[in-house]
Length: 386
Image 1 (cartoon, rainbow, N blue to C red):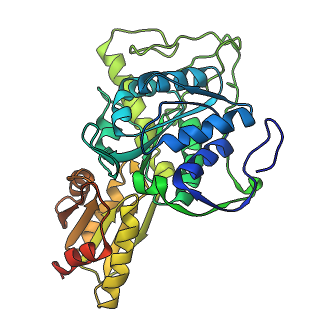
Image 2 (image 1 turned 120 degrees about the vertical axis):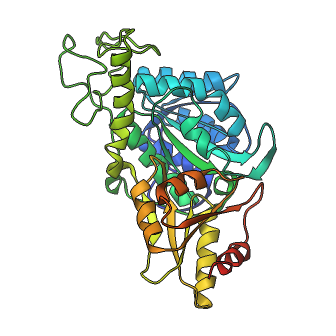
Image 3 (image 1 turned 30 degrees about the vertical axis):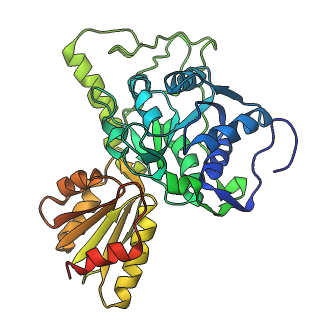
């Protein structure tokens, strides 16, 4: 990694690391200089690595008393001018929801990593799960959109962490990395590109005078200007209350509706920039699989085995989970009779898949709880619909 205070960023090259290690190094590469967290399986390694690495790169680290204060500290650090991140798992993610709502309302660019484990409650902390998919979008109260990305490998833990910071900064929105225990603890080859090959979105000063600055005045995309650091001479007000362009509270249902609609539309209307997929679609398949995260790798193996038996299966992997790619799922549904949805829960993303399919294909769940699928299990389900 090299040496030297404030300059120890991972050099380009090939590494062998876990998903959690790759996430931490991706965050540092993206410019993250503040991390706050609380130990929780299976995300603890991210915090441990950041505890060591933040001082090395001139950043700040804070182990908090709980997850509530962790995300609050991240929001404060971002307002002070840093790029900030926290990491947790299901129970801690639940505790973060109120302040996640604050980040949505105040349009705070931050990154939250959720390494999902089997629940509810304490559940099976060391077992894999995808049980927070719906919590990511609907866990907070009220309306308001977030962005959630689902990596399937350590390489993507590195790449998507950088992308998460870029999206957060470009759209002033919290971004969730919906990892799972298996991705977090898998050790694999991770390639770190040359620095000049990486796109890093840096925060710039507002392009208006301090007197003219309005922290919530949106541009044509619905995105307000970048946040200047508190104490830098720009005077503005932050509150979780509904507010005007200056940030001051309002009590007007019509203006509140306009605000909530903008918070949603700045993501939905720019979804082409935010939606990332992996797909294999043919003209002669009756069956498709829609999946996300670590399950996708098992599904691909099952699809390869099915092809050996003369069964062609289409494939769509959700890299962006929210905003959901309704149009892409509908296109897949229009070309097949059945869509199989394997996921490590009792059935969550399947409801949104079925909504997107609009009855064009029958949507069938394949549920797994607290353990990863075997390729043969998915292959056996495929054969039922040939």
